[in-house]
Length: 117
Image 1 (cartoon, rainbow, N blue to C red):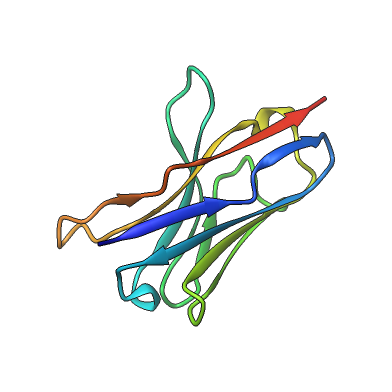
Image 2: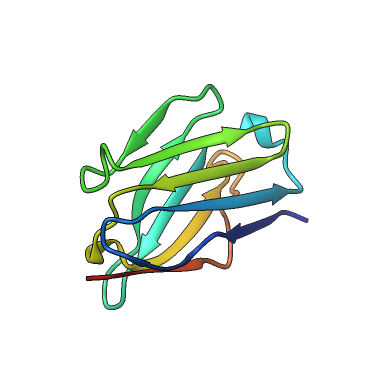
């Protein structure tokens, strides 16, 4: 059974930092691309950052230079370090992985990030 468990969300003032973690079980973690998504109230879910099995990263334009995605294959954890947070970063953040070729699409339960102005 595949499980993704996010943690690290919370309430922070603008300009502050948070680090999100996503612990993964049930898949060969090191072989999978991992992604962080977010969904703000009334908005569609959007990709925030992704990291391939080889460590290549990509970011939404809105978070470039502020957020950093990383992974620890030994611990089967993917992180999202969020610095210089803005009120518009407020959302539920979700961890995602899977393989389109295998028809896999796995999501965590989400963790709330609230940035106050």
